[in-house]
Amino acid sequence: MNIMKKLSCPSFFLFFIIFLNSVNVISADDHQLQNYQQVMLPGVVGPESIAFDCHGKGPYVGVSDGRILKWQGPPLGWVEFAITSSNRQRKLCDGSTDSRMEPICGRPLGLKFNEKTCQLYIADAYFGLLVVGPNGGQALKLVASAEGVPFRFTNALDIDTNTGHVYFTDTSTVFQRRDYLLAMMGGDKTGRLLKYDPRSKKVTVMHKGLAFPNGVALSKNNSFILVAESTTMQILRFWLHDDQNMTASYTPEVFAQLVRFPDNIKRNHRGEFWLALNSARWMIKKADSVPWFTEDPVGLKFDEMGKVVMMLDGKGGEALESVSEVEEHGGCLYMGSSIKPYVGIIKLNT
Ligand SMILES: *[C@@H]1O[C@H](CO)[C@@H](O)[C@H](O)[C@H]1NC(C)=O
Ligand SMILES: *[C@@H]1O[C@H](CO)[C@@H](O)[C@H](O)[C@H]1NC(C)=O
Image (cartoon, rainbow, N blue to C red; front, side, top):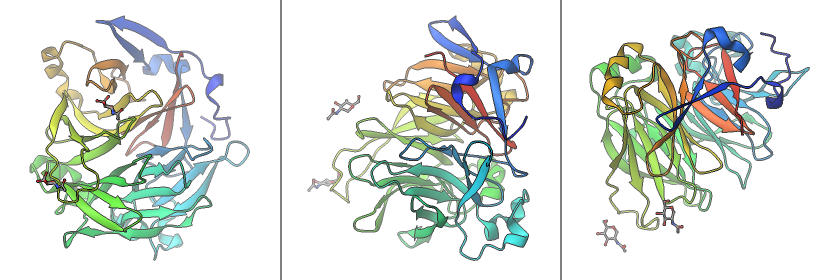
């Protein structure tokens, strides 16, 4: 598809909604591509996470060559917005899809704008937590270790809309992103949930010993945070009781048990949560054990109680076989991927 195509939601065709056990199911299979559009990236892959700025512009995506790109609409298409590596070499990095280059070029995974300051916070797998202003450029590294232990695989983040505190995950203190399969297969449990306070510039370890902590999302009123624990196929909930109490211990509860490996979680404007399920299609046999049987769940929308209220069904096709994030914005679902060369978009019937 043409990258110059206008990326505006209302021009997309409607998709089908099927009611199944009172859960809305959205399907976008390869034979019904009119439901759905792909916006190709300029020669790179892996738009893992998707963000919109405080004016609703974007999407912004972090890609395989370490850059954060911004969609400017036609005729510009994608333009470079920011980079995370301070010694990034353009000749080596620009256009790279080689994961061996990531420690030099950077690999921005988690992206989120602070709604008040319009700054973009970035979780880069190799360079820790960074921030860049509304005009982009070279991002500033904020923190790259906690309790004396360096981050090894900074992954996802969300921002408290009242305090500006940044909650983020370091997936492992042992394995880097390139070796994520080793971390999962070996049952690595060195992941951490962290909090960064932009005023004091201090980082706090909220919880350690997590098995591949991945996406994070705060609730609409910032009373709790959800963390996708990929290896255990669970979403954990941490209540954020006493924010001032730095010694408070945070004990998670299981918010949802899943049938596939969860990746990023994003909250929509109604306070619901879209969870992306990275495909492992052999896992589907387990779906018999859950009440909301589906063929190929690649995204689930949860309410605040942990109930599934909508499902994105990939129908076994290639288009949605690797969904890392589902971001609801302006009546559309934007779908990221850690390997695909495009951002997928489905218009919602709202
Ligand atoms: C915030 O939301 C949670 C979950 O819906 C609810 O239990 C809590 O009472 C709310 N807190 C405030 C202060 O509104
Ligand atoms: C802080 O949290 C700890 C652990 O939950 C608790 O024992 C302590 O009483 C709290 N301190 C204050 C001042 O709330």
